[in-house]
Amino acid sequence: MGELTIVGLGPGSFGLITVETLELLKTAEILLLRTAKHPTVTEIIDRGIPFTSYDYVYEEKASFNEVYTTIAHECLGQAAMGKNVVYAVPGSPLVAEKTVTLIRELAREQGIPVTVLPGMSFLEVLYTRLAIDPIEGITVLDAADIVSLPPELMTALVVTQVYNNYVASEAKLALMEYYPDDYEIVVVKNLGLYDEQLLTVPLFELDRVQGIDHLTSVYVPRRIAAASRFSLEPILDVMATLRSQEGCIWDIEQTHATLRRYIVEEVYEVLEAIDLKQGEALCEELGDLLLQIVFHARIAEEAKVFSMQQVIDGVTEKMVRRHPHVFGDISVRDAGEVVLNWDAIKKQEHGHERPSVIDGIPKGLPSLMRAYKLQAKAAKVGFDWDNIQPVWDKIYEELNELKDACAQGQAAHIEAELGDVLFSVINLARFLKIDGEVALNSTNNEFRRRFLYIEEVMKENNCKWENMSPKQLNLLWEEAKKHKI
Image (cartoon, helix red, strand yellow):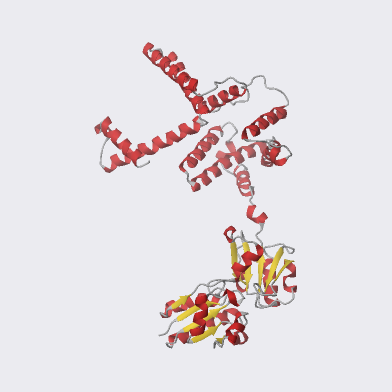
């Protein structure tokens, strides 16, 4: 049994054939070309290299699938008779070459060795001419396969093998199912040759372009709007159904007040997903948080207070208004100046000065977060230390006062002094530019993971809590730390 080697003739210019391919063309026992209608073939003839082309198959068969299948069986038939065959295709063997795909599949079934050599495809030239970076995403389809175009294609598209105006017409009709009739496309003709043409035309004119032949492809730019399009309609519809008379009893009974605990819980679950750096979990938790927002908006809409659209419009207008350095003509030097502008704009929006500097902090905030915001507001008017050292001193002072209170044994006094210690620690966090609420939440999650590890180890070793000494438990804790749990 012989073997089959598949090579590419490059995108057009003879100079783009690899040296390895050229040597194989010269020395091939049998050289078969999918088509002789390729610019490099003239050079092959001039060099006296004998070959056989399969152009006659295109004339005999009724469809491209029949053409490709016939060529694949013919090539493998030559190799099966013990001949060493070189099969050459336009461009690169592995880019939009149906015959190569079929040959490799059939060769595996028949046990015929096939080698595919790398070659330059027309895509490399196309990237250069249109200044395209393929890393941004590109889909390549044979014109014969355009019916399999994904409905929500998010990349640019290259349609190859647009042989004639009939194929162009079929491609146009298929593309018009996905793109507007006047969507601008690029018809690529004779790429890499002296008479190369890149014609930008509306989609509906594709089959009216003159001179379409076997060296014609079509480039369809990515749909920017489609790539960024999304809709809140599905979740809004679900929530409307849940709150309807035919909906869920529990959902119907909820109010803004009864939902308060859930929105807080969802925020903390989002924070945990962020801390764990789990993308899928974060996606899910953000969805749960969004559900709570939609829930509240639906309740408000039923009461004719506001709608979800007003929520979106309001925050959009606010962000534009508070970023005049982005959406207006104001310049800023640094992030600090951005914050100053933000605060000044907020004061203008409220239309009057607040009675107190520390107004505007919700009483329902978690205590650590509320302490942080109270300190930050006071600091804005100068009620703050100049450096971090007095902050450390204050913590030590409050710790000593807590020790004294513990010695006296009065619960109310101990509670007050412990509150002072915590308030001082949050002040330190503010100086260190760390959110105390987030930091403590992260530590809580870490403690939980390590404690679960200890429980798991004890379960594996049939240990019980009452039989474990503090020293043994501490060793397991250190083991958990060592494993970065």
